[in-house]
Each structure stands twice: as structure tokens, then as C-alpha cells.
Figure (tube, helix red, strand yellow):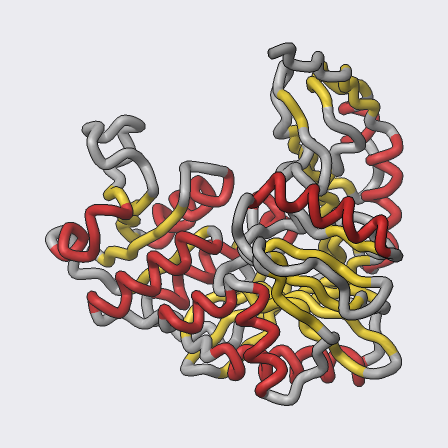
Length: 398
């Protein structure tokens, strides 16, 4: 039996997708999580807690590969892979990829385009290199805490807001990078990047917050722009020292060139991966999780190609903070041409937080069509038919 390690912070959508893919491939997936190490298998998933260390995992092996869902799990996976002799990204590379300041330093040293930036510690005077600027917590993902400021007062308010979120950690401040934003999903083998998909992000992400909504692939950019994105992403992978495993990169493009925002040492998160289907040596379409498992366990996946047609996902944004009461229009949205699926992940009675504090979505819309334009149209049309009820949260009286 082939065994593989999967590191994750909790049992979620993507973890279940990996388990399904592993079952199809005949791979035994050993789950490693941040669950309490004192309780005896509290969720009956036979998971090994992070704190148990690689020694506890060795007895459950041998393992053919390792994967991770999320930034912190990726670092744990890298440390375990090094101790167990498995192929993965080096721990120092994963650490740099998960720290926005270290990422900027690596990109600057490699000669990539970087904005003016500085790190502000709690005991230092907070000021911007120029306006407009963007303030960023170092270790949060999914645009949490990322705020644009156009003047000194907006900067002060943004800085205080981020401080309430992260406490005494430093804050990165950098010049705002104008331009169109893209994402790249890829696999790295021996330091060489294989591009699986380039996503257009057609919504203008100009601030003050940077909530991502629509991802569509294949990109509608000219071939030379797509080549430049791939080449720059490869330079970024090399600059960080990433060697083996999935990566999710984000970048902006403007008349001055390609500006890398980040390269995460993990795949695209949440349910978004469902927007991607691939073919690998046969007519059967496979999901991203199956492709990643094949790569992690040593199979040659260099021939993998995006399945025919255009694919897209909308991460349904939370328009305002409050208590989620429900949604109307589900059947009307599902009936829109080219919509493949609709998943509402918010639960009735759940307290919702919008960006910049929030870290979730109301749900996900998936579409597939012949052209990327048709996918985007379907996603927006279906979203217009959904009407979410969110009531204001009552203030806590102390």
C-alpha cells in the first residue's frame, strides 16, 4: 500500500477532496493536523497532531510523499519531509514564502520588480514610503488585514485596525502597485515550475480592501504576457528556493512589467480547486487533488494539461459583517447556463466578518463553458440572482 502524508490545520473541504482522490488512486492518506495532542483521536480521523513530531509519523510509514493544505501546515510538512527524507519544499523556503517581508527581500535580491517597502515594528514610528500605499500583516492570507491608504489619516486608521488584529507583530508597508491581477497554479519538480493554470482576476482590486471574487482560466491575456507571467513566476520560485510540490502564485501586470505579490508553498485553497480539471495521459478528467497526489508520490505529471474549455469560480463575498440568516434564489442561480455547481458554505446563525478582518466567504459558484468570457458572464449572472440575508450583530455590552 502506498502511503502519503497530508498536513492540514483542520478537516475541511479540501481535505475531503484529497481523501476522495487518494481512495481512487489506492493511496492510504495519513492525516497530520493541529488537533489537541492530549485528547484521544477526538474527531475519529486517526490524525497525528503536529506537536507529536516526525518521530511519531515514522512508525506509520514508510511514506511515498507529503502534501499540505495551508501556509502553516506547509511549514510543518517541510520540516517533517526533511526529517523523513521525503521530497518537498525546504523549510527555509516555505518560511520565506509565508512571510511577506522575507518574500519581498528574496524578490529584491533576485532582481525582480518590487515596490518600495519597509517593516514597521510596534516600537517604531509608523509612516508610509509614499502614497498610495498598502499595509499588510506578515503572515495572514486571503487578503486578511490588507488595506490601502491614500493619505496620512487613512494610513493611521489602517495601521491601528491591523494592530487590533495581530497585536505586536510587525506590519509591512509598501507602495501600491497598480495593474491587472492574476494567479498562477503550478507544480515544482526539482526547482522547475510547471504551470497548470493562469487565472484572470477580472474584478479591479484597487482597495481599500482586496477581496478576491472571480477567478477564470485560461487567461485572456496575449501569449507574450502569459509567457512573461510564467517566466517571472519561475524566477520567484527560484528566488525563494522552492523545490518540490504545489505552488500558488499571485502577481500584478502593468506597463512596467510583472510584479510578483507572493508565491505560496501550497495549492489554491478551499473549494476553489474544484474549478480546475485536468487530463493526464487519457480522456478521464481528474481534479487538482488527484494530480497533486500523483506528483507527491513520484509519478511523472509533466504531461498534465487543463481540460478543454474555460473554467471559473466565484468566491461569494461577504458584503457586510453580521449574522447570516439565509439565502434566496438558489435554484435560479443554479439554472443559469454554464453554472456547474453552487455551494453555500455559510451556516444559518453564523457570525460573518467582512474584510479586512474576515477570512471566509458566503460560498462558491463554479462555471464551465467554451470561452472564458462565457464563464465570467455565468458567474456574475448567477451571483445577481442570489439574495443573502445578513442582520446586524448586536453589540456586546460589558
